Length: 97
Image (tube, rainbow, N blue to C red):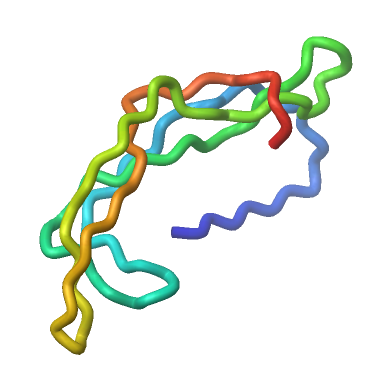
């Protein structure tokens, strides 16, 4: 899902790092194969301002990601095991984005 927002007013960055949850079938971007079941997919979204001048210098990152495995099926009938990281919380982290 891509969201687009336009504004002609300059607004200061606001600390808004949070968790986004989507439920659905995972489609591998390389193989185009699909997960056998619906998954709860998580990602961190938002901005993390610096403490110096309000510019972005840290990243919105997951806390304690856990690797989960699931089965994928391709149009040819080929199946394989895939894994993704899932998490319950996000926080601003002073790391390279």
